[in-house]
Length: 511
Image (tube, rainbow, N blue to C red; front, top):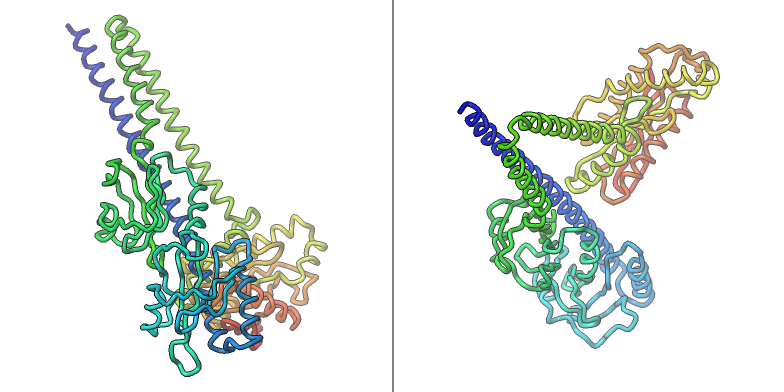
């Protein structure tokens, strides 16, 4: 009897453990798929936002030229050539660009064989700009192009004549196929989907189980009902109304534009491998339990072996996660100094200038160079030079306090400090603190005029307005660093910059 009770108890706990294990694997599989869907949705969001920003900036520039230079003679030819040049870029999303007059007549076209007689006055976007003076770029729903017969989306802006009245519109078209080609790069499964739609539910790109939904409305779908309740981004498991398939859906509203991207992964495809493994393991449990009652003595050995296997698997997973975290940290860290490396600096600088461009904030950069470092290496040797760089990096790191600030090794004996939301005066204070911190080290340097290791620093701060602001900012700070070195080293120089001006004035501070 005792043996039977033990066998029943072991059977119960074996089934319980296996069920718990498969439930854990089930949640883990859904969690990993959720992360994958959110990452793909984020990539699609950034792709759409980047394309829209590029075209919007281009439309702004064309409107400015039309309103400033006019459309007479040579001015019109130069503008047409400029538009064709932008259209010919390899990374361009554009199909065509056009300038229309107040009656919808075509004035400038990038098409090789323009249809001058066709008027766009009946298009909704034309009527909108004719009655609205907001000057904003308007994105229209997908329409069929009258010239190419393709599905396109339109971006348009109003332009005014010299008297300030409606002069017409500037129009850019993006083929829907541009986004489809990008989405085909991602593997979302045979029953998965990627969707780009207007916020009112009009589909721009959408393929579901062979259906082509471009131009259709999905405003009443469960996903859009969930969006209206849950905000600009989210992830949810929903059953679609057109085929009844349950899908894990992650969506993002494109910032600044009436567009939303969605990635949908079919639940049955997400769990296909899980179901296979589950069936196999439960089949093995049945066989095991049959053998268990015949060979009770083997039961304990089997359970212990399985427990050891699960422990090894968990340990291997933990080790793999730790190694991945270490690799990610090493990829963004300078091996010698422990500061952020150039790659990390470039990524953070691009992100902060983009944020400042949107928010109207400032970004400052400090470029730092160890004075006469080649002489130091020649005098004390490269091993001492490495020790010197580590000490200088540690001193520089002590002056960076805010979470968003970043100290990085730029290359060789050069360092950089990124200071979001900081003006020139604030950056000068940080640079001077870094110079003082290095001086406090009092590292002997006979090849330097001060007798110790010192640094020179160049400071620049801007309120970015253009896409290449990050490069301009670094160049301005580097120019200020050059001025500091030319002025005698062991000092800080500042370049006062604006959006379109890299250097206006030069100031210096010295101990």
